[in-house]
Length: 363
Image (cartoon, rainbow, N blue to C red; front, top):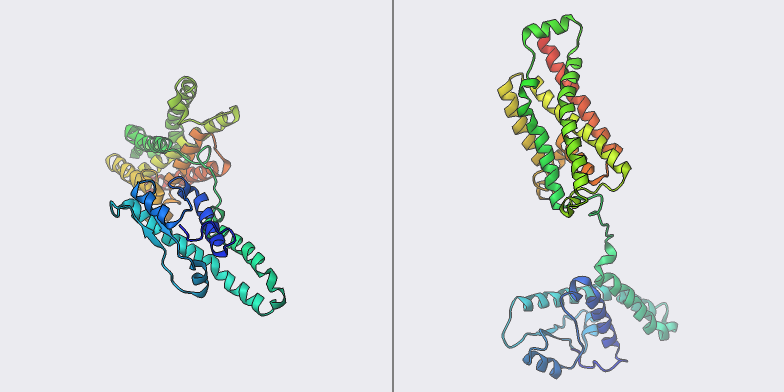
């Protein structure tokens, strides 16, 4: 409510209306409330009749007082039932609006000084240019959306909640597969180690052979599951919310991603078994280290909820690459950089495992 709300030539009302128009067009506000211009009595009657939720009574010289630095309060009238949560929201809204308006008007001070000094001969144009400058200032002060660029990542780049936990389950299943494969992953006995060394078969070769044998089994299992679920999603809409592969090229890329994903996870398990060299302790290490790495990489709880230090460390852990690749597989967005990252981890794990085995063979 403003006293001269019908006075269209009133300069102060023009600025106030401009500010409220901008505020009322902000999505977060227009979805909650609407503004009406009226006089004081009609606003009070509307509150009594429960037609209005809140009355914002703007003093006559608000703009002038803002420009002169005087803190003139805006009166906020609540319904007779008293103050509630809604009242607090409107009070804060008015307070924020007043702060925005004061910030927007700050630039007018310099502008008016310029007209009163250097451009005094053009003072007749001052009002027109003030209106234009106010329009620019208010559009920046009150329209927050111009400061941010919105990018929808829900279709291809991001993961929904269901997809996030599907990827978590995939990575966890791959890491825990070391428990079922403990018999195949356990280290060589002394006699076999000497025989392999005598035959010229390096530790790196045996590591590749062992991980390839186990990896092929899991690659086939995951590839079959991937193909079957892609066929099933044609009749089950719920699966379509998880898998987003939409072309033959994406399907082939996802199958390649499954190969690299499984081989990287199996190489991680092989490295731990080669370094620890004890079946029981190797299984425990795989479980504990795998869960810790998954947590730090944001595979169990989103990285946004982790401490900055943990989040930074998690970016460089192998589980981050595994989780990213798993997400790209189900989204059909497998890219060369993620494949390269996981291939590098495969090389590191195979080299570390081979070095550990070689040291034991040379004892």
